[in-house]
Each structure stands twice: as structure tokens, then as C-alpha cells.
Image (cartoon, rainbow, N blue to C red; front, side, top):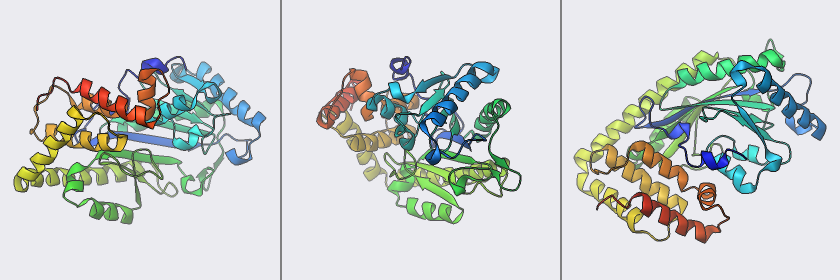
Length: 354
């Protein structure tokens, strides 16, 4: 991939820490599931039909003004590390990476827009924004959707809406999600109550990389589960309202930690910083957990360091397995990655005093 080396050295859009409430809400994402009329769903597609869909997307990118800056990348020219790299940046899903022979992705240079071709559906259109900004993400993805709809006809039923491979996406085909950093709720042991309340509101809670993943680094993804019977604006407004409530609970938990458990809380923060600055071998899970606490310490005013929230967010991404291998420009086994991760973190934190 021509731009892979450039991507590894730039912050992903969802980690820029520039949007509303970005001290808690890391990112907002909207995803639209679409299928092209005249083709069966993915599982029934033949290889020739898959190639036709990818070609149709390529032609649409060339013809439409709003799409011309998107670069399409076919998976058949990528390595496993390349695919994992794109997963880590949320440009594709783990399931999409499994479509190595036929899949493709189109992305904008700033990584705000990503279009997965031949994931679970023919098209999965995504738009990202930093912080809690679902409205801006909707403006972007709705425009992209309209451009595609003008060049290829979608599978649509007047009674059901957009037809999708999975029944849970039928209707609008819209999945709205926000990624939240919730160390306060985790440390005060309130996060399970919040997750239970969200489940009653038909909102799904997942880990960093979506369905089937566990929360690491105190990062949680919250998204709608229903797409049928609701308008797009209703789905977005409902999620935003709930996210604002979760943000308030998180801030209250952080205030409680500062006022009631400051000694123990401060010890956890400094121990995390010490482990990152001095460790020689560190796993991805351990590193993300420590980085979460350090970021919380910075936001709470306990740590005065010369790194911004965007710097810390960027470090969180750079220590992921595929990013480490891209930075080293070679394959690394698990042990080598743990050493390289520790080296990278120490280098980034070398001017931070204990």
C-alpha cells in the first residue's frame, strides 16, 4: 500500500482529541450498511461478482466529485501485517480483514471516511470524528451515501428499508457508535451498573475493536442495536443523549476519586507512569492499561508532563502489534514486540520526570 508508511506516522482521526468532550469521548463513528441491487448477499457472491462490485466502487470514486479524494486499496496486494494495521486504525474491521482475496477499502487522506468493500455487506460506509460529534459525522457520511446512490442502485424495500445481510441492520442500515474512556467508572466499580442500564436501552457495549472484543485500557464502544423502525436522526439523537449522561457519570466518578481516595488514586497513577518509563518488556494489554491511568492523571492535574492528550492517544495506537512492526519495518514475534513496545514508550516518555 503506497500510503501505509505515511499513515503510521500520522495520528488517526479518532484519536486527535480535538472534538467536544474529548476528555471522555474519544471518537464518534457512523456506519451505513448497503448492498447493490442485482447482486446476492456476500455469502452467495461468486468471485466474478465480487470483482464486479470492487470495479463498480472504483468507477464511482473516479466519477463523483465528493469521492475523488478517496484512495481504494485492494486486499490481494496486502500482507497480514498490513491488514492488521488497517484494523488497528479502525479503517476496516477484523471480519473484513478476513476477505483477503477479494476485499478492498477506500479511505480519505485524513482517515475521516472509510468505505469497506465486501465486508458483511457489499458496502460499509464509515465516517469518524474526534470527541462527541455524531452530527458532523452524519453530514459527512450522508453526503458520501448520496453520491454512491447516484451511481449505483441500492437494494431497498419500501416497507423494510435498506436490505442487509444481517436482519439487525435492515431499515436505515445505520450503526452509530462512540468510544469512551471510562477509567473513573472502572476504578470506582460502577461501570457494570452503567453497562446494565445501557443494555436496557437497547445499546450494545463492546471493546476497542467492536463485536467480540473486550474492553482494554478502560475503552468502551457504545452503539445502537436497532436500525428498523427508527429514522437516522432518532438513532443519532438517542445515542448522543445517553452518551452525555455516561460522560456526566464518568466525571462524577473522577471527582470522587480525587476527593475521597486521593492517596490510593495518586499511587496508582504514579505506579503506572513508573512502569511505562522503566519497563523493558511490556504487553499490549498492560501498556494500554497504564497509559489509561497516566492519561487520567494528566486530566486530573496530578501529573504535569510535556505530552498532550493527542500525544498519549497517538502512543496508544503506536504500541499496537501491527504499528510496531510497521515502525520497525520488519516482522516481530510476540516477545520482540513486547521489547519494542517498551523501548518505544521509554523513548516517548524520556523527558517526563518521576
